[in-house]
Length: 311
Image (cartoon, rainbow, N blue to C red; front, side, top):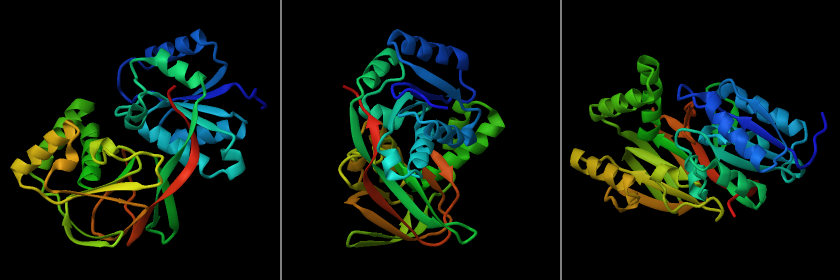
């Protein structure tokens, strides 16, 4: 199927279990029509279908692909794009209409889920910026060499464990709010320390660590100074604090001063080696991934995706 170069391929990813899914799309559709956008829409049935649909849009020749979704859907999109040859990828611009739970990467650029018309207006101006991606390179349980890209951040340890707890309690309670509160309650009685050995630049960290955030973007507040266009990764290594310090750390996270906490140790690098992280789960752009087997590393790939940014 041949498409016009100016026609957008829009992937709509409804929020699972939140509100009226059709009502949200109706608002997006109205804004697209108001701005005279020519588009074709496909809707994901589940997170597993996103990569298949993105691949379909790429193969059908769409030069502008817009994700109406959150960080995880964007993650799937960039991983699909990175499977393509450079000359194919160079012709495609990726945009976002925030429609996820966190929308951290969209929020970094100033996109607001409550201002759909403004978002569409910015996307129509087609201001493109090449952005960096982080990449984890690891071995899976079958002994196969694998890699996965991320726009925002990769978490090792406690933050990834919270993602897992939320997923399990969501199945139990059905409610996102109840699952979040119950996960926090469980965490109060769950000592989160992992024996890790990390190599960052000339530093070697060989001790028990609570969580590590590796950010090409803001990392949900854990790498607040990271930007996806400087060819660097920001790394926050958090040692286990006492309960009072933990509460203080949560407050600093909420108020945007996370790096001021005494147990947070920040680094900036192009590559980090994780030689050991026993039983520590790994989360990537808000989604839990299968834990790597043995040592793995994370590096930055500079200016590899065309991203539509605000005016």
